[in-house]
Length: 139
Image 1: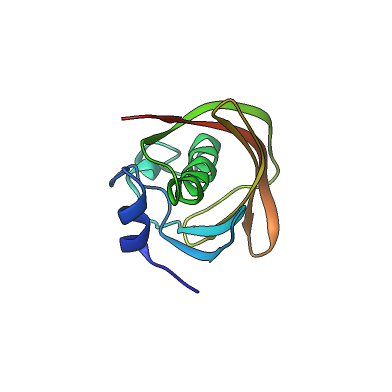
Image 2: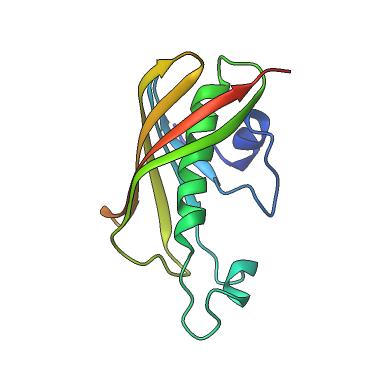
Protein backbone atom coordinates (compact mmCIF):
# COMPACT_ATOMS: atom_id res chain seq x y z
CA UNK A 1 0.00 0.00 0.00
CA UNK A 2 2.02 2.95 -1.24
CA UNK A 3 0.30 6.31 -1.09
CA UNK A 4 1.91 9.40 -2.57
CA UNK A 5 2.12 13.07 -1.74
CA UNK A 6 -1.44 13.72 -2.92
CA UNK A 7 -2.72 11.45 -0.16
CA UNK A 8 -0.52 13.16 2.44
CA UNK A 9 -1.78 16.57 1.30
CA UNK A 10 -5.39 15.37 1.53
CA UNK A 11 -4.80 14.58 5.21
CA UNK A 12 -2.32 17.20 6.49
CA UNK A 13 -2.71 20.98 6.30
CA UNK A 14 1.05 21.42 5.62
CA UNK A 15 2.24 22.54 2.18
CA UNK A 16 5.59 22.99 0.44
CA UNK A 17 8.15 24.01 1.37
CA UNK A 18 7.22 22.72 4.83
CA UNK A 19 5.48 19.49 3.90
CA UNK A 20 8.11 16.97 4.98
CA UNK A 21 6.33 13.69 4.16
CA UNK A 22 6.37 12.56 0.52
CA UNK A 23 4.33 9.40 0.94
CA UNK A 24 3.06 6.56 3.10
CA UNK A 25 4.39 3.00 2.82
CA UNK A 26 2.26 1.34 5.50
CA UNK A 27 -0.57 2.48 7.73
CA UNK A 28 -2.24 0.60 10.56
CA UNK A 29 -4.50 1.69 13.39
CA UNK A 30 -1.65 2.74 15.67
CA UNK A 31 1.40 2.73 13.40
CA UNK A 32 2.55 4.43 10.22
CA UNK A 33 5.60 4.09 8.00
CA UNK A 34 6.11 7.14 5.79
CA UNK A 35 9.02 8.63 3.86
CA UNK A 36 10.74 11.72 2.55
CA UNK A 37 13.16 11.67 -0.37
CA UNK A 38 15.99 14.05 0.47
CA UNK A 39 16.72 15.99 -2.70
CA UNK A 40 19.95 17.78 -3.49
CA UNK A 41 18.00 20.88 -4.58
CA UNK A 42 16.17 21.18 -1.23
CA UNK A 43 16.49 24.87 -0.24
CA UNK A 44 17.69 23.92 3.24
CA UNK A 45 21.06 22.85 1.79
CA UNK A 46 21.83 26.42 0.68
CA UNK A 47 22.54 27.15 4.33
CA UNK A 48 22.96 23.76 6.08
CA UNK A 49 25.76 23.42 5.01
CA UNK A 50 26.72 24.48 1.45
CA UNK A 51 30.05 22.61 1.44
CA UNK A 52 28.84 19.65 3.53
CA UNK A 53 25.07 19.22 3.11
CA UNK A 54 23.38 17.53 6.07
CA UNK A 55 19.60 17.37 6.49
CA UNK A 56 18.85 19.16 9.79
CA UNK A 57 17.86 17.07 12.79
CA UNK A 58 15.06 19.46 13.64
CA UNK A 59 13.48 18.76 10.24
CA UNK A 60 13.77 15.01 10.84
CA UNK A 61 11.86 15.48 14.10
CA UNK A 62 9.26 17.62 12.30
CA UNK A 63 8.93 14.90 9.66
CA UNK A 64 8.26 12.33 12.39
CA UNK A 65 5.63 14.66 13.87
CA UNK A 66 4.01 15.13 10.45
CA UNK A 67 3.92 11.37 9.93
CA UNK A 68 2.16 11.12 13.29
CA UNK A 69 -0.22 13.81 12.08
CA UNK A 70 -1.14 11.73 9.02
CA UNK A 71 -1.99 8.84 11.32
CA UNK A 72 -3.97 10.99 13.76
CA UNK A 73 -5.87 13.00 11.16
CA UNK A 74 -7.65 9.91 9.82
CA UNK A 75 -10.22 10.10 12.59
CA UNK A 76 -9.72 13.51 14.16
CA UNK A 77 -10.94 16.93 13.17
CA UNK A 78 -8.74 19.97 13.60
CA UNK A 79 -5.06 20.76 13.14
CA UNK A 80 -2.30 18.57 14.57
CA UNK A 81 0.05 20.56 16.80
CA UNK A 82 3.54 19.45 17.69
CA UNK A 83 3.70 20.19 21.43
CA UNK A 84 6.73 18.39 22.81
CA UNK A 85 9.85 16.32 22.25
CA UNK A 86 11.35 13.92 24.73
CA UNK A 87 14.49 11.81 24.45
CA UNK A 88 15.49 12.86 20.92
CA UNK A 89 18.77 11.35 19.73
CA UNK A 90 20.59 11.79 16.45
CA UNK A 91 22.72 8.80 15.47
CA UNK A 92 23.73 9.32 11.82
CA UNK A 93 23.80 12.03 9.18
CA UNK A 94 21.14 12.30 6.48
CA UNK A 95 22.44 13.47 3.12
CA UNK A 96 21.01 14.43 -0.27
CA UNK A 97 19.92 11.33 -2.18
CA UNK A 98 18.81 9.47 0.96
CA UNK A 99 15.29 8.15 1.46
CA UNK A 100 14.35 9.02 5.04
CA UNK A 101 11.83 6.50 6.38
CA UNK A 102 9.69 7.55 9.34
CA UNK A 103 8.34 4.80 11.60
CA UNK A 104 5.86 6.18 14.12
CA UNK A 105 3.81 4.26 16.66
CA UNK A 106 1.13 5.59 18.99
CA UNK A 107 2.02 4.82 22.60
CA UNK A 108 -0.77 6.50 24.55
CA UNK A 109 -3.44 9.16 24.47
CA UNK A 110 -4.32 11.14 27.55
CA UNK A 111 -6.46 14.26 27.84
CA UNK A 112 -6.16 15.03 24.14
CA UNK A 113 -2.36 14.63 24.07
CA UNK A 114 -0.99 11.75 22.01
CA UNK A 115 2.46 10.32 22.74
CA UNK A 116 4.25 8.65 19.84
CA UNK A 117 7.54 6.82 19.55
CA UNK A 118 9.36 7.69 16.35
CA UNK A 119 12.33 6.29 14.49
CA UNK A 120 13.81 7.71 11.33
CA UNK A 121 15.91 5.39 9.20
CA UNK A 122 18.04 5.48 6.08
CA UNK A 123 18.68 2.12 4.42
CA UNK A 124 17.37 0.31 7.54
CA UNK A 125 19.87 2.14 9.79
CA UNK A 126 18.40 4.29 12.57
CA UNK A 127 19.35 7.95 12.19
CA UNK A 128 17.03 9.50 14.77
CA UNK A 129 14.82 8.35 17.64
CA UNK A 130 12.41 10.51 19.60
CA UNK A 131 9.31 10.53 21.74
CA UNK A 132 6.94 13.19 20.44
CA UNK A 133 3.81 14.74 21.92
CA UNK A 134 1.06 15.81 19.54
CA UNK A 135 -2.18 17.64 20.32
CA UNK A 136 -5.14 18.53 18.15
CA UNK A 137 -6.39 22.11 17.88
CA UNK A 138 -10.12 21.83 17.40
CA UNK A 139 -11.71 24.10 14.83
